[in-house]
Amino acid sequence: MKTLGRKALRLLGGAIVLGGVACAELPEQPVLHLSDLKAATMQVAFIYEADVVVPSDRLGGRVEVTFLGAPTDCYTFASDVRATVAGYEMTRDPGEWTRESCGATSFRFQLSQAPELSGRGPSQDVVELSDGQDVFRATLQDLLVNHGPSRLEVRLPSSPLEAGETLVYDWKPGTDLFGDAPDASHATFTLLEKGSQLTRFQHTERPLTSDLKFEVPLPASLRTGEVVGHLDAASRIPVLSCEGPAACEAPARFRRAFPATVSAP
Image (cartoon, rainbow, N blue to C red; front, side, top):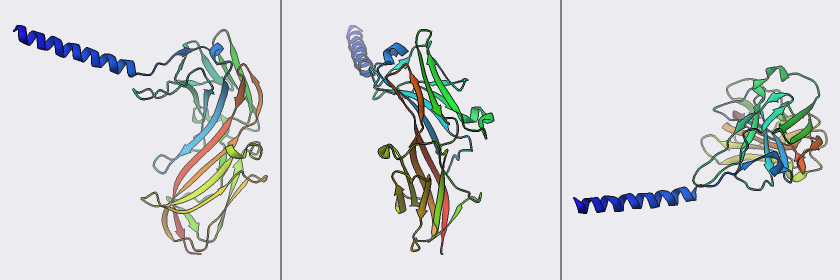
């Protein structure tokens, strides 16, 4: 019994040591107030994502607030920090947290939460963070509308494309910025083989032209058949004012996948 007892104690001790090592490897996640982020850049991003399996609706985009240049890449906001956009409450997202990595907390707002935003005219939208002591505030031009390329398409299970035609996408809204930040502004159209990642065709424009039109010339020799189309685009939203943090920026990112069928000209 004594021998078994000693073995059990050794096993228990080993488990405690291993547990301690595992716990020591967990990334720390400091709690930050707004005062800790005054030297950082507040990033107010508009993100639209839709894929073949889960298509997005007209109001499928979201606004996401994060900070670049924070004291650490892995942090959470203090419990009294709250965020609003145009008066709407934003939801706190804790970010991914695993033994290997830790993502910073963000604030998010889905446009689908406010369908009354659809169809409104030009607007100056205010994003505000506060914690009872400090206030961060950014005013942005036309933030709460979907940003990205669009074109009139027949609503079918598979978008019809014709080899040799030129697809014309209009970028909306027209207030977005491109030419002054070519590295952060682009539009890419890609056709992949259905069921694989082999590229059948790709066209990129960086940055977009001043008329905010993304023209995609499909070659006449493009092989016909079923494909999966991908649109990947980015622009910048004008920041009209920024109070509190060292700087504010507002990137817009658009990603959409859709089934398509290429026919002969």
